[in-house]
Image (cartoon, rainbow, N blue to C red; front, top):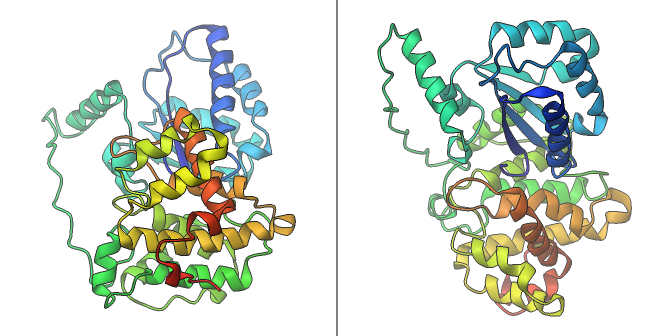
Length: 361
């Protein structure tokens, strides 16, 4: 899984009706961890053979198992290595599928194409899928083995906001501690979004978010009023955090955060406070700015339905992740507990260090 829009990976290598039922139960169990927030599904269509194809009736029944709650926050469904079978199957089921849901489907012929849609370094791809992709590309190129080389990344723009470090942004903005994209989205949401029900749980059009990111990266002004959607700045804020090269809570703290479940409940607040003391100054200040705002949001939870627990489910995966791979299901609970404590006990956790930085009076 990956970030507030979380990503689940699946392959088709099942045998028998019983295993199909287990597959559906597994998917429901897995998706239940994420469906309250924006999430993305990547389906690797490899391993399906005539001997293990599910029947159309079974597929229809399986689709009915996933009610609206599994569809409303789904940002995108990527089908990797689609075959004629999967395309025909989609056409058969289109009358049963809403037009809005159908627009979320994207076919991806080769793994390299996922770079245009997802953070490549967050993907955990099964070896069989990697080998299958190589074979497909080799066949496409007349039997030549595809080169594993990728073009060197372009240097970031001086005005870049997404995909660069906090230090880079600070240096290019004359030492400003809070990145402009954060200060602007937080300021707008503080004025317009505190009482919006489900704020941070809704998605926005993918292309629109990309357009706003491009404006920020080019140093052009962004006027959120013109979009008429309070969820646009909310998604932009989450996207900014998710695309940092290193999470705001840093890689070295990931293990300590995971160990919070081993700490006695009465000591967890002080433990969280102690853990944050080792953050670099810049990360600490930005985190404090963000958590002050999220604490404000939680204080309106009777109206906006975003309690510290709900906010933690959204922001936990955007504040911390391992240096290798993505956040696993078992890692979500301690991560969410840690984030909930930071939000609910903001004034205690951030009480001593840098007291002058109370940024959102």
